[in-house]
Image (cartoon, rainbow, N blue to C red; front, side):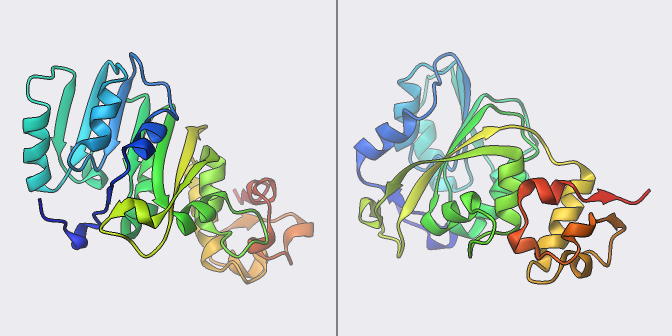
Amino acid sequence: MRVKKSLGQNFIKNKGILQKEAGLAEIKDKIVMEIGAGDGRLSEILLSRGPKKIFLVEMDKELVDILKKKFSGKENVEILASDFLKLKPFPVHIIFGNIPYYISSKIIFKLLDWDFENAVLMVQKEFGEKMAARPGERNYGRLSVTSQICFDVRKGFGVSKEDFFPRPKVDSVVMILKKKRKLSEWEEKLIRELYAHKNKTAENALKKIRAIIPDHLKKKRPRHMSIEEVLSIKPKQ
């Protein structure tokens, strides 16, 4: 099996980490999806925990062939040879994924369109910190605000770069996302504009869109605004 750097492939060597990751969500009798199933090392553990159905999403043809051989005859396993970002959403209960850094943001924003209960995602440490960042912190921005509106965001556990092959340059973290709701069209537009200019004042950041900004927020910078303050900005009719 060749590792393809162009696809951001890194594989966990330590089976104990995969066992711990699999234990972060109750999947017995649930419909499960794994994003980037790779060679099936996490998939095997998930399957042993009794899901009703498991969808394995993998775009690397070589790995798809490995998955087909490994899970041949397993009626509750369906392999989707596809890029997750191009998949049309369908209902699932639990989502797992060890996510390449170069498409982490795209995957999180894509998940906004999916109906699910919980997602357990291994991401690079800095990306996890961005998701959970608080107002005023260096990493606080569009990803933080969107994630915290749409999900209950919790850190599961950290994973050392030494536990991967090939070894990446940075450590990772497993994040747990409990789906709360979707963004409205206005909220999506508002957050995108605010955090494209997060160092400007709110009134300057939002000059391009028709927004009613509470007086006490007009001079405040988006990087210091709480979720509640962001959501208090309404569209002009």
